[in-house]
Image (cartoon, rainbow, N blue to C red; front, side, top):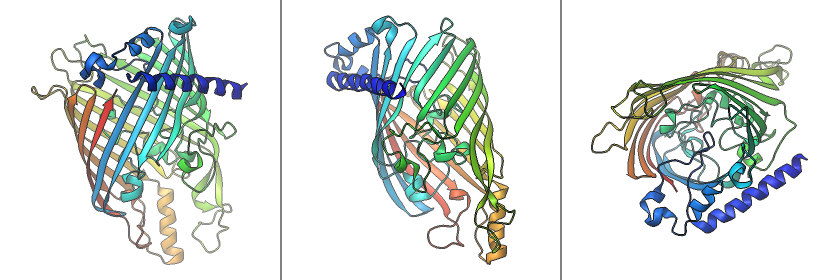
Length: 464
């Protein structure tokens, strides 16, 4: 039955994609809201990019689809693994089907998106050696299925159940304001503490998600997913699940839940907008102790068995804050001066990064001559666990090797978003990365840590 459901859903997605390619007119579908954005480059084209009315006709019948094309050129000027430049691209095709409008099945929706990834694999992997995100489109080049799910609403639209190929980073541990930056991503904690990084870009995995909105201001989310989207192995998880078609269901599960409270989000509100989120996750697998072996010796000791002690499960807790500090007269929740912050914690004996912080500030629509522009600064801080640092000390003691002591990675981003036309934005950006990889050895010597890096570049995002 599961295989039949996947084949049926994939057939619907493929048919929708064929229609999309033929029509030549698109509107981005937001997997969180199910609403196409008001900003699309189609509004700058003749006939709103829909000369034959195909897009409008399909939308009237419940079919929404679109392309988002993100390209960037980023250069590492100093430090890191090596100097150089990379070019990366992500072409995302999205489709949403409302079966209430299409076939009279109210509350049932389908969503799917496919990623075509281009370039060298990104600056973090190839140039800097960072753990924190430098580019949130960084990935190995391929074409892969991202999400493919069915969702049924019930209780008059107050609740919904979603099932299929899912990610969690579009709804959980998500900041509405941080998404302005190119470093906005699934945080380093939990990314380095869950097998294959968890169900977050560019990987996805089978699962279910329950959403309940008791009031317009509050939301409860719960998701249960397969715990390893790529499966076990020593090579890159993106290579183990190259096309997003593994559909693994037998790994220990991953569970995440979140409570959200929002305020003054209505466009007509005059108060300062914002929101808070609290959540936690648990992985039911087993994890290696980062310092001790199966009999309690240090893994660096000559007496070690060489087999790490196995620990049951891993956990995390987190909080997210979005707060508008200034709302211009007539402005909406995403205008003015905006502040965000996220914090996450996991137990240090089995987690490479035990706690993580990020925060930033954005000035949106503050230049009268450029009302659609924004600029801001942010930082990401990933602390390396004391247990990992203890192993480094043991390496110095038992092996006489002056390896660097892992401590933290801290990165800063400074970005300006310049609107060229509605639906096309260009982002000049600059990044400072301190202690890439958490102060780990570089490729030249096991006793010399990777040097601090400086990355600059530009990104283009076109929504069509």
